[in-house]
Length: 386
Image (cartoon, rainbow, N blue to C red; front, side, top):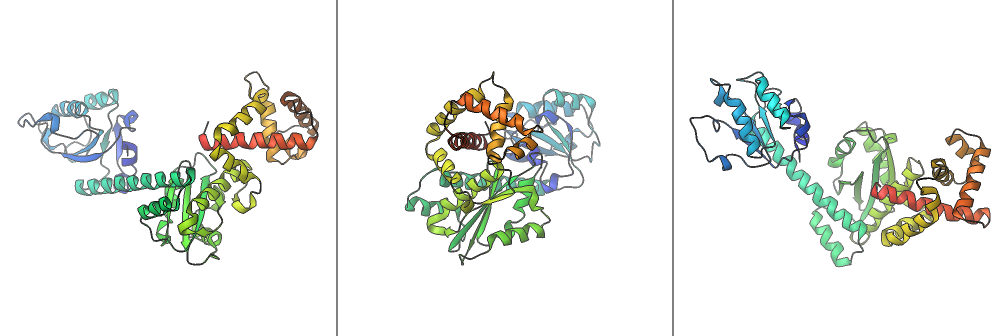
């Protein structure tokens, strides 16, 4: 948790940052109250007055008669490793310029209460948020291991027990990605669906989000239910790229359902489709398994085959044309439309690509080899962000 996260809590949503805007990344591990600790009449053990990485709440009563105490207090908080000072504007509606200038210089956030928020409630909400974040990190760590590692049945049983959720007989998994990279708080919006999941969970996973549903019937219409939930919460489905898994026995097929939904959403994003079911991926599912189990081997093939297109001196239009050619499944007219040029220009580029990669076999072999390299190349970028 950092100061920016702290400001996103319901109770602090009306707080304003009056200084130290460049310090909102500071880590927050605690919230404490400042009363008279920096009054010259009181001499606490300064090194233990406040815990490092704390947001310090104060009404600034200690400086009521002596505003010049404020600068010393801010300096001391910075020395003690505090993350921010949040003050209630009951004694001071605004702080002296010298205090704000110093805080800006030190990138130390000073926050102003928005109203009559209670100190104790701020502390409770902050700690509750921190505990939730810890559990979310714990869940994401478990899901990552289930996706990336091959589990024994005993290990899987242990992980499911650690998740401490009531799971029904069959598991269905959905993986969602935001289509708009600038869409803020999209994961938090989807987290609102969690109360509807009596026997499942929602968990962030990298740049995506898992919705895990379980049900007593293998015929459960989980896609229909998801659409109904999104409509209920006024979350337009077109904002997301969605991958759906097959159904599995919860106690034995949990990792397979996770991997399938994850793979389906990745390839939906690659192919610019709104959604994919894993069962519709056909041979594309082989690429994600190859990359998962033999990433070095997969990328060796990619770098060798596509080296002439990825070279710094290569025409960037060639690799972009190759990618679109595979996404459009070899339809030259659609590739030309996507690149705003004549189909003959695309044919010329493809001939150049074929010459550079040294593929002198027939058109089908060329497409097959190029498709494998391009899909692994795109998969690598989706999984690593490289």
